[in-house]
Amino acid sequence: MTQTNDKDLVLEAKGLTKSFGGNAVLKGVDIALHRGEVVLLQGANGSGKTTLLNILTNNLKPDGGKIKKYESLGRTWQDVRLFSSQTLSDNIAMATPRQSGENPIKAIFTAWKTRQEERKNESDAKAIMRYMGLADRTDVSGSNAKIAEAKFVAMVRAIRAGAKVLFLDEPLAGLDHVETEAILETLNDLVKKYGLTLVVIEHALNIPKILKIATTVWTLKDGKLTVGTIDTADDASGGELKSWLKSQAIDGQLNEIDIPGGAHLTIASRKKDTPVVLEISDYTVNRGARPVISEPISFALREGDLAVLEAPNGWGKSTLLESIAGLIPATTGTVKLFEEDVTTTPVWKRAKKGLRLNRAAGTLFTQATVIENARLNHVTEPVLPNLSNRKAGSLSGGESRRLSFETVLNNPEAKILMFDEPFQSLDITESARVRNSLSNNKITILVSIPFLINKRG
Image (tube, rainbow, N blue to C red; front, side, top):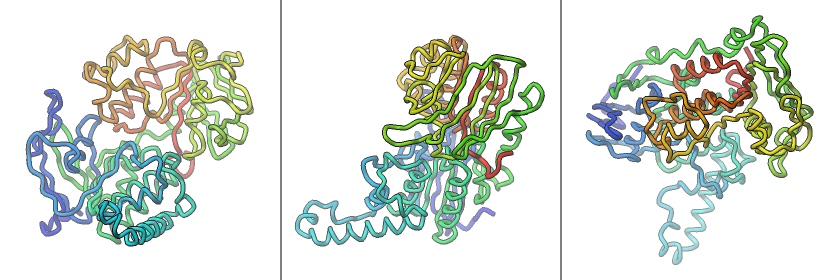
């Protein structure tokens, strides 16, 4: 039940408006946020969810309206922003407010006090890492952190800096089932034990998970915000993996393969008696000197197959797809395209044979428009026609993901498509559209996703 006592207000806003290039995103948004609330902020891609978070946290100025805050605010981002050269514990420690070392005079003339504070902050940070179950990862640099570790550290760093109200932009994106449950448990503890207030944006597949701890639902639509309880959240059902794949298989039967290291490959054959077009044999991959896929894996896909690779985060899904595409060399084993060994063949030759990879992030030219990004991928069909003249860098997270997906899917030269987490950052409508697009494209497709549930099904 939403709290209504005005004495518990931690943030309120009246009449917030914001437009971009004549496009009105927010049209008089009113907000009353109370201590201890856990708010799910939902809305279609491009509805202004991240814009609203940026305005409420003073990272973006509204065109109109007023905001009053009664508690300290903090936020995390879709792209987790750690100090890459600092250790995880240092990322937390440096967020401690009012450190004497920040003042050059005090740092020089009371150096003993500065060192004493630094030791205490370091000790506190390591204690927080132990609380999160990351005691053995304190000295890992931000650039080498796993995605779940980075998200944990980003959250507690904001709290360490004094935040009593925390805005989280897709905190579960890219996490597998185990990592998701750990994040939710931590958030629930922070709310119940320390009175933290949360506002969370999540994409469609993760909405049911956030609803486990949510008390209130904010819905952004057509520039307006409405407030409801958890039973007003979007229904994310109907996208269950196995039933979708079965609907694609010509005989309703799936070929399921357990892959070493805890991964699982599910293949829906959409054509009969077709030749093998992609074959991976006894394959291992390192990133530099670090083994990523250390146990040899083997599988084959035929023309027209739709395959989904599920694996825990850290298994090497992205590494495998990038290696198949030729971006990372294989350590052992072979890759064959259309029965030709391409294990040592450069990227451009694999692309010339029709192999295309859509990576999870960083695949757009941000200063180019939507239509220019499409043309650079030889796509002449309309892609996001309502946004064709917008620069890619100005798109929302979901819009960017959709553009990246469509420019690869509609490439007329593609014969084998690989998509790394194509549902990330998408709302229910866009997730369904992506599934339909994958279903309607009958060339060979390989999709990678994290395990979303504890057991396959």
